[in-house]
Image (spheres, rainbow, N blue to C red):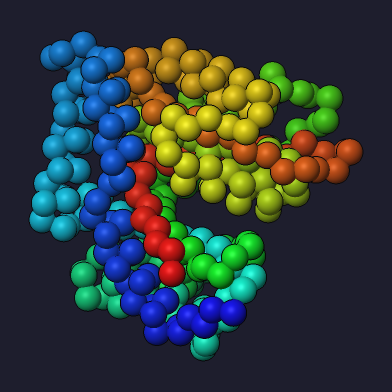
Length: 279
């Protein structure tokens, strides 16, 4: 049994929030550079991608946010079954978020949905807990901006609709979003489970390395065909036209009921921020 104190978790979340808001993962930068190479030099798409890449580099150098929308903090906690957390996991995560957003002067965007009163510290975080084998605690912080989150959709398809309808749902979601989701985007797709499982599965796909392949041939086909059709739309970087609208489509699935086919599409803008650490 490994004992992990909540104070250590709080410090870890603070550091992950600070890093994730300022530094884009290397695979995201590589995908943006590859997208730039697919555009005509001098075109709006080429210039826009150049600006996005330069902005990311400047943010990293100065440790300033790469986007003014520092998001709602989504935390994934994979807890080993041989781990004992001394103290409160929930308190530790939210204290870490609070400290990061106040001390680093990140924009505080979290408020009551009805009164619209701001909490002034970007808490509470969205926390997804999953128990796994082992004696480690893996924490992943993903600040989620709402330009792209607002464009996400949940479909409750009929079982007979099949793969074609799943692909149509993904493609139509991206096309209907247009420039609102700040393309080029990464698209997370969750298929199966119940409505909430499909949505969580979709969001977890955004944590995958860009371009990594799904587990099954069927999911890989969905990823390939949806990406092809999205990039054929011509929406392009920031909706200004171009060859690359999606850097990747990542699909995952969960077993579901005989009467259902839930499909969630979670949109992620080019500022695909996340950072992780294993304690």
